[in-house]
Image 1: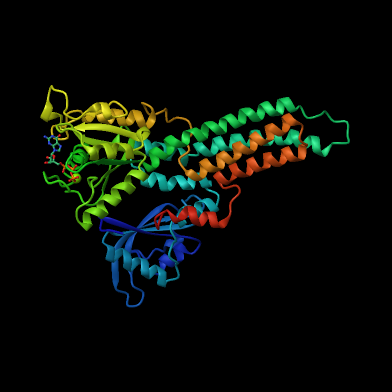
Image 2: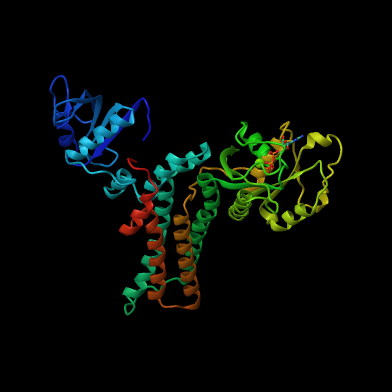
Length: 447
Ligand SMILES: Nc1nc2c(ncn2[C@@H]2O[C@H](COP(=O)(O)OP(=O)(O)OP(=O)(O)O)[C@@H](O)[C@H]2O)c(=O)[nH]1
Ligand SMILES: [Mg+2]
């Protein structure tokens, strides 16, 4: 909750209108209880204790089932200050309402069947999207893109399951035997569709969570200057004194639709004082946790043992090597020996911003193999979904194997049911209460 022009206190449930009526007074004396659905009403909220006016408001009345939660909803537009909102909220609570848990509105929308679980999960992603591409993927999931694909796949599995079960039920009768070759090839086709979804998960995670990118290097090579150049503002303190950055600094930038979570670290060197030691320790951790590392060297100086030690400690496959301060050796080769580096470096000047564009290109190339894949098809954005898809694909692979080696129909049917229930957990057809708690925990209150 913060200060804004307008704040909204919202309430959902069968008694929402009745509770609001106890506090709301319109000039005409009209009651919200009798209002037509989807109408807006001017009035004041009064403290029922002394009748004192708390705030001047507009109240939106939305009746079930055409609402976010499929229940009656009232939304009170009040003044945006935290005090007014807090007063109205506590008056509601006194009048019989109960405080929402994180994500409770969306959870009710799921429980009441307005959206499925994958759609509900995407709501949090729409709210937290960091780039337009991330928003687009989240919106497509909210509109049911992923759910439809999962539904199609489940229907196809059910088709195969039906033919397998026919073999079980009528074992003694003279019914056509299961065509194992045909069933196997249908399952192979379905497995491939699932695998394609699993493969999309990498892009999905990158777009929704961002790429953790650590800027590392010796003290004074220009790490903070690079952060500022990428951000296009003076975020981090830059000085000529080595050891300027003591703590890690994080900022998000957008590189061709990919959110990069940039982490400026303390220069790596056998540390001086205690504060610097902690900073260096944090840098080590940042390197370990990073998806991508920008390893920076001062091109105007010769390499030394610290540079060599740093190079051996970095994973080359997720590192982009950057030679900085090109303005100091313009037109000439850098003093730093590039032959030491496992791959071609990008030469930049954080001071003049020369080469920054090329660096961004290189990063985009490394992260997504050149360009963003088309965002049209469904894209998996959650680890939970990816794991369940993998379980489904594995069960289908077992079933195909079973068909080949002549395993009994019962056992094959069992594998198919495992696949069905894994996929069903994505959309929430098969769900346990605990899982809902975990999922909605990451929502904010009021969403
Ligand atoms: N000529 C030139 N100087 C630069 C360039 N980039 C950074 N510097 C200078 O190098 C010095 C150190 O820059 P910082 O960005 O603070 O370096 P750092 O790597 O963050 O240093 P620590 O935080 O101490 O580890 C400053 O005096 C910068 O102005 C560059 O491209 N060209
Ligand atoms: Mg610094």
